[in-house]
View 1 (cartoon, rainbow, N blue to C red):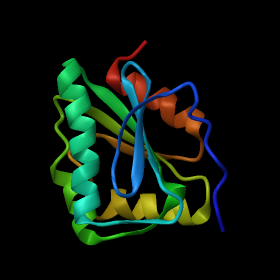
View 2: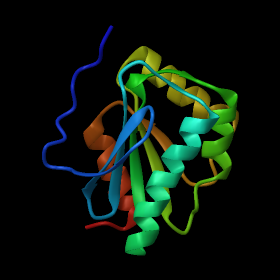
View 3: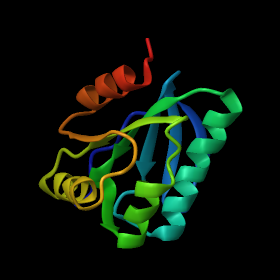
View 4: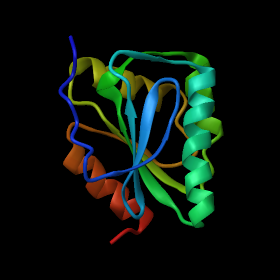
Length: 141
């Protein structure tokens, strides 16, 4: 079953990988919008972190990152290890995972519970809650 579309017209696209689009929602808050029913593996995880860090390092600023988990069909253990070890706390303030469906929440909870990332990571039921926390963690206005 496909998830609802997410309105991105007001966001600035900062990149694309084989399984996701990346946006700056506002200064200090990025979004990772996986393609519907995508698989996330070590290669796509490395690409995700690379797109985020290239953007953040170029602007010399930190950001909270909102990730829409409902769109991820599978996530490998190798992908989770990349997300656990490769974020740079100097640039990644946090990961705010949005999981509104039972499946999305399960994937997000598994990700956080088994091997927590080295930056603060929380799961939220709504986009609004996730963005509010990401702003707070990043010190964004």
